[in-house]
Length: 61
Image: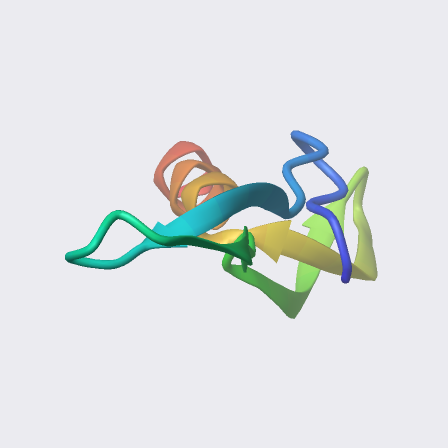
């Protein structure tokens, strides 16, 4: 599972809890995408979470 290269966000561990309160293990995975971004004047392929991608687009435009 990849992590965001900007904020280091990755998967977390938790439980699915049913109506009967039975807990089964599960993973909460980060929403990361491979995108090409301009960093320091050069095009770079990075894995970035959607929150950082949104912030990056807001700052650069």
